[in-house]
Image (cartoon, rainbow, N blue to C red):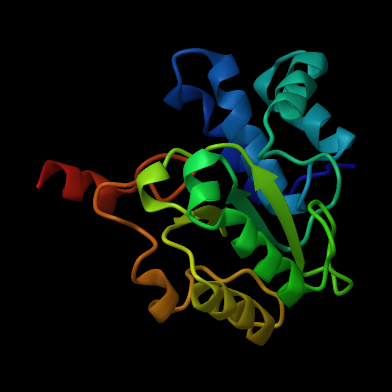
Length: 197
């Protein structure tokens, strides 16, 4: 029995031609699997290996190396908050404490009682000039404040826990500075247009 849907399988099969080497497709393929399942099961990693015609041990090695990939369940809405120096100096731990209070967890890597939220402390996400910042819903969110976080958390709860395609308009205003990548899958067409303007 397949761990992944036909849609995810098709998306993974479409990846290899986009890369010079098949191994370069492993990380995006695991990202597709995690998006669908919420975390990477052994079955999903084996299926990714089979789809890319690679050794399952290699695929599992990639999955265990990158912190943005999860081998255990996480909340449907997962906050990756940078706590490196720039973010720390600009209040990252206060941001983390605020998130913990709002979602009802005591520590990092806990899942809220309703299964909707989890929080992870991560290393630098490469946007130090916009500290404090985080990755949430496949987007970077910059210059974080308790009010911006409240808007995101409230929107997730109002949406019945379903992952929204985009964050609420008022919270999105400062999330994507000009020329910054908004997704782990690379720049969007909008980003390219901004960079070439």
